[in-house]
Amino acid sequence: MGRAIADYHATSKAARLRVFSPMLDEDEIPVATLFRPLEDMPAIEREALQLARGHILDVGAGAGCHSLALQAMGKQVTSIDISPHAVATMRDRGVLDAREQDFFTLDGQYDTILMLMNGIGIVGTLSRMDAFFMQVDRLLAPGGQLLCDSSDICYLYEDEDGFIDLTGVDGYYGEMTYQMQYKGMKGEPFPWLFIDPETLAEQARPHGFEVELVARGPHYDYLARVFRLF
Image (tube, rainbow, N blue to C red; front, top):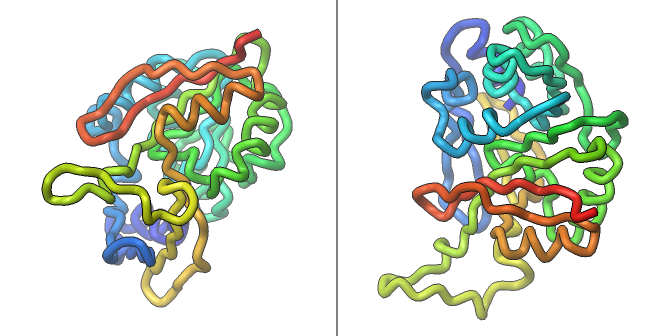
């Protein structure tokens, strides 16, 4: 993805960014959408940007579209991504504080942690939610918040009559495996998590966090605000 981002930034075009999964048909990420301006973002993302406050951490910032929108609003944002190509692109596009950094090894204090475009998917599996919330607890300043969007992908198991049958699913149905290919480069398979809002709340509560459902999108997607109970 980082190479695709760099190519699009340099030439305003990119080859196909192909996505494979054993659970789904082959898909494609339109690279141009990673560069979209505020007015082209979904309503859920625009609402999240408005709610973001204080020192904001943009996790998995990619090409920096959310970070640039936040900067245009006069907000302070630190943008992290594990791809050096993405970070170089962000810096060249004007993101003021872009860092090549893994969320799980980051230090610091932030008033808002922002994870958009299902950024919480980096957790990978439900079993890693404990480690995730321990890191969120370390990074959030007093009174801080996590803003994240995701999707309840139960619709993948919906039959033609609208009935959802999860009885044959091994493990949590929101755990996916993906692999990306760009030009001749094919990455390693990686786990990616889609978490429904009820399960997110269940996972958050033992760590002292409450989940507020801020908005629902048109197709099982939602925006959540996560904050400390005490």
